[in-house]
Length: 232
Image 1 (cartoon, helix red, strand yellow):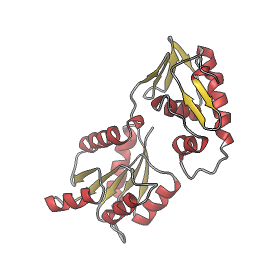
Image 2: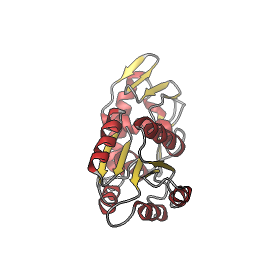
Image 3: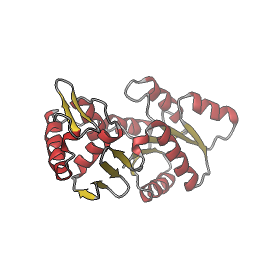
């Protein structure tokens, strides 16, 4: 499930957006100022930000530029919201680093369509598309994992871990990378926690003879491979 940060100082608009996003299946956090938004981003990096142009103190435009100039947030997907409809304003927003630009008033359906479009371009793994690697299949929308018609029961963390590995199959990921992408960066837990959850995930996948798809790459980390006979 994707996490969306809504940065909007008008509480009624922010709540309306949040309600519709939650109804569409997204997790939502709201910030009313640029400083609050920065605090939220420093805590957990969201999958996408809906950013109002006009904010008290620092503007959304300046905040977008700030995020684009920082290594940690330079790829952060941003949709700019504003009452400014002039072409020069749209260009300014896009030049500041926004991935898309929506003028007020706007429909909820249009906002959701633009969110999905940006996520498809920037983070396809965040969508609820069915993923299949080898004999293993995952449907994030229904939270089902199966192989040859047999369901696999997973806890929330193991589900997220497997989803990341399946959407990045055949790539090697270090423990620190997995912590950042699965648990969220700035989460202060030890790297060996990854080993514990990988062990649990393998135990669950053993039921469908897919445990050995998760390969330990000595000195590097883990990867998920299509070959079920990989060395664990």
